[in-house]
Amino acid sequence: MPEVPVLEMRGLVQLVNEYADRPRVVSGERDMPYPEIAGIAGVPADLAAMPPRELVPAANEAYRVFSAAPEGHALEALNRLLRSTAPAPVATEHGTRWSVRAPWHVLPGAMAICLLDWLGAHGQHRLGLCHAANCTDVYADASPAGRRRFCSPTCLNRHKVAAYRSRSKRR
Image 1 (cartoon, rainbow, N blue to C red):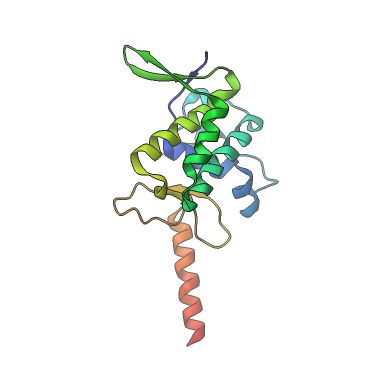
Image 2: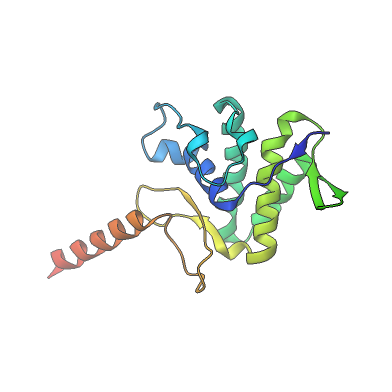
């Protein structure tokens, strides 16, 4: 049974934003080449060698968890992902590790376990989709206040500038 590597949330967020279909279409990157996965922080080396044809479906499944979170349905989406990959805990001298039945379940299994850990520690209200116009990237909010609504400072700034310009026009 293949072992599932540990995937950090920041790596998962970037994988979903770079490889899931919806963010690529909305950002106009649909027909552009996929970025090199090796350059994504928080992604283990054994996942970095995966081709896009394996990354895209897994990223789309993880995207469904993020997009279901604002309505309170992230756990349902995550449970579907967990059932499809069936990661199994394995006790070792160094703690618990996870394994899956097939090699093609390694990446979705790593994503599912990362999301499972995150949701257990932070709750589904800390996952979501960017609120900026023309952006559907995902985010995971680790801030103390838990009020994040944008995927990046760039989207937040664009939103603030657009709101300012809209108010200025009305004067």
